[in-house]
Image (cartoon, rainbow, N blue to C red; front, side, top):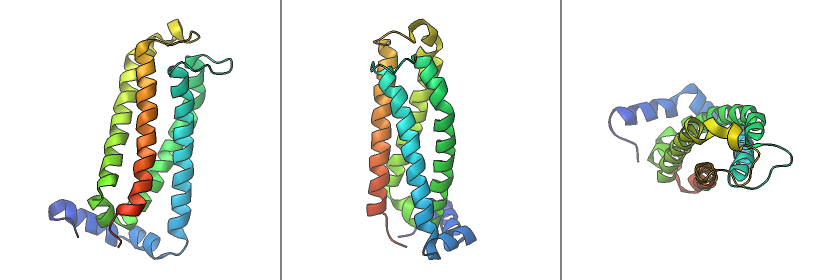
Length: 170
């Protein structure tokens, strides 16, 4: 089933693009991109989980919440950027199918909510991290942000795996 309207035309254009066709028709390109995507998602979730667990009150080996965040953030952002690029490449290989996939749509929504959660945390509780960075348990707002973030990233991974088993084949 192809999407209708302008969005449908865009999805079809992405599907028919040289990149989409090359990825779709190659016997090795899709698996290599997918492997890189999964490794980057694992890095994103792993680095976020380290910080989130600290925010939830689990001690980090001799690191304050602030130092742990500062140490992990560069790895998280690089991995997230690479995951977004590889995810985009996977998407264009079957844009019409992925666009119709509800797990794909839910995954994008969950990523947006995770981003909002991170922004709210950084503009609220994190502003006073120097006041509570070494103390356990962290403030209630930090624990909620950590739990929400960890939960959302587990859901994102779940939805990502679901996508591969539910989208219409090209």
